[in-house]
Length: 247
Image (tube, rainbow, N blue to C red; front, top):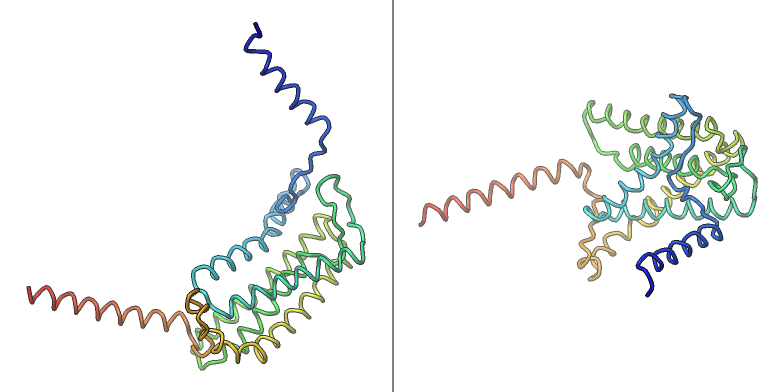
């Protein structure tokens, strides 16, 4: 009679053979290396993950706000990433430091630099041209702080790729240049060509089903939503109070 341990040994041997025959490659999507003991390098490694936080923010905003402008902004980000992929696999320039099994793709142009500068260029233009309503000095101040923050963040992410030897100066330079050019071009396309069609898009039945909205003509969306929700809440409170008194 076969002992209970034999099947387990057979399964174990199959796992051992599979491990020996298979080449295991780590998922390098968020894996960033830095020199051991280098506190500044560790900080830059964390900063280099900011693009993933931005993408997460995009997805969250699209799911919960359904604003057309956010959606077309994200489409531009996706187009920018696709173009970066095509350029990398066309130029095929190696990275300055070869990391076995971690980064098999090429380094020209830098994906992080192109992504961050696309985002910074578009966001800065959006702040100063799209949000061109009459605002207070405090609002202008905070708009400027946000724009500067986007640019400084892009600089830090770009520098982190050179410091951590994932890209050369030339690779991040071209990533920066392409990102700024595409960000500005996409903003012009959205602002002058696509935005006039937003009222038509939101009138479609599929848009009503998906609860898509167009906030182009609303200068301050946060204040608009705040005042409308406050007004509606007060109206409902008065209605409930009147119903309570009638009973």
